[in-house]
Structures are given as structure tokens and as C-alpha cells.
Length: 410
Image (tube, rainbow, N blue to C red; front, side, top):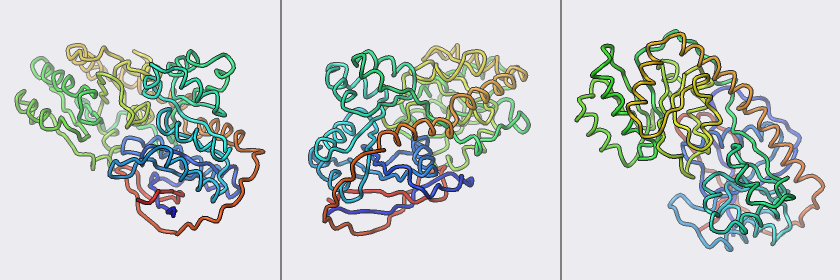
């Protein structure tokens, strides 16, 4: 027997646009797991779709404990829910297991499907591009979050299948993320928000702060928000470099006041050594949010970030694992008030033009509605679906909105 949960899912604190009561389409989202703290952009995407009249059903392949049953078993279970709930179209995040299961559901039920392909999904298929090409061919459409990924997908597909591939940038809610000028910012402060793992480049960040300690009289105050396996190593470096009075590490609970931190610091540092993995958004939410509120960002040109930041205009891009260059970028930015203001305004304009949640979800909604329209109604199946309620919470996102969530029983 399947379980159906009508779940209170977190949303942002501001008042969203009134929900469209007319259903545009009934869509199923297939995800490997419940969205992580880092996937605020995915939360916002789903909630924005609902506000536009799209009825969203969430299917999770992996339970909280990390256990995943056989993909074919999952596909049969989702197929039963497709029939029971008259879902018109499935969309998978991402091109790996979620797309495999979704494609099998299509074979079982005839329901159309699409998927989002990030870089990790593309690299997963590097030894079997034919499998990726088949998924693209069978899908109604494919979305990808940046042009770099789109070019790789087009190279893997044939000329006809390539027409199905759409670049849709992730979006942020510009009504919530108001531009904040320089007033009230500590001119000698840097904020970093990232998991405390090797790929985030935080060891390089601490080395840059140590360099500035010896050559910049005003010093630099650094606040790091995050959790991860390297926390003890980073704290040891802070003590070794004698930076305890200048560096603070806040756990993920501080994400509830992340916007306040963005409005009191002078710079955001995201010195990735390599790109975020598949537990995060293709672009870090913090990057787009900082640019939206007027906090200049220094980062590295890994994957899609080089499409977001125009070096020297809307932020700075430096070579990964180069603390000397990072320290020099800090000096230049912190010592030049006018440069920071100019970059902040340019960054806000860039986000408004390319990363608006409303505009980008409008494009996605049209694709979903086009895939769902005119599809034959799936015959009702006599499946018993008991009701239950669970609460879902994620730091930094408050309030609630009802999202239909399907969890396969143990």
C-alpha cells in the first residue's frame, strides 16, 4: 500500500503572489532525496510553479536514512501513484537515477517526462553517451542551468534531439531580496557561506586572511557559515594562524539570519576549488542572493559561476587555490568603496536581467504545460491512499505551503 502525505513545506518569509486556483497542469517531480539545505533555489522553483497554478507532486527515491530500493521497484510504485493521482507529466532531478526511474515510469504508464541535467549527470554518462542520448530522445524536453552544460548535452545528442534542450537559469525572488546599499556594512568584513568541505576552498580563504593580517593594518574580519567534515581542521588552522579574534564559524542554524549577515558585511567570498557536487544547486543560492542584495562576490570560474559573474564588473573571479591572489582581491575591494558600489549595482542588474525567479519559472511553466496539454487521461486505479501529515523544515526558509509529497512505505 502506498502512503500519501500532504506536507507543510517551508517557503520564504515574504508574502508570495496569490495562488492561481486554476490548475495549469498536474506535474510529478522525481528527486533522489528531499531537498537539502543548500537547495533553496529548488524549493523556490517548486513554490513558484504552484503559485502559477501547477499542481506539484514530489516523489523521493531515497528515504531519510539513505536507503534506496531497486529502481524498477520505485518505478512501479511511482507508476501506481501516477494512475491514482492523474498526474500528466513527470520531471526528474537529475539525469542519473531519477531520470532512469522516470523513463521507466513512462514505459509503464505512457506519461511523458522531462529532466534537468546538471554537470554531475553529464559526467556520470561520459563513458556511455548513448544512454544519455536515449534519455534526451525519449524526453519531451530537457533543461540545464547554464550554457556550458547545454553545449555538452547538445554534443551528446543528435541534431533533432538537441532541439529539446533548453538552458533555464535558476532564479531568485527579487521581491524578497531587496537591494541594500553600503550603509551599515562593516568595511573590513568578509562573509563566506559554504559546506565545510575541501571543494569549498575555505582553507585557501583562511590562508588569505592570514596573509592580510601581516600586511593590512585594519585587518579583515571573516564570518563563515556552514557545517561539514573539515570543521575541526579549519578551527585548528584558525588557532594556528592566531586568527581567533578575526574569524568566526557559525553553524547552519545561522542561515535563518543569512540576509542580515549579507547586509552587514562588505564582501562575499566563495573560493571554490572545484564545483559543488550533486547535493547542491548547480549554482550556489548564496551567490545569486548576495548579488541581488548588493553584496559584491569574489569567487572562482568553476562550471556555471563564470556565466554569472563578469570579472571586474559584477564581481571578481580568481584562480582556484591561490590565496595570494585572493588576498590581493580582498585588498583591492575593501580599500575601494567606489569599486564595491559599482560592482554591487552591476551585479543587481545582472540578476534582474537573467536570474529572476518569476521570469525563469515562466519559461519552465510553458514547457511543462506544453508537455502535459492534450495528454490522454490515465485510467483510475483502485489503490488505497491513506492520508498523513509530516512537517519539513530547512534553515533560512520559514512559513509553510502545502505540497503533495509521496513517500513509499518501508
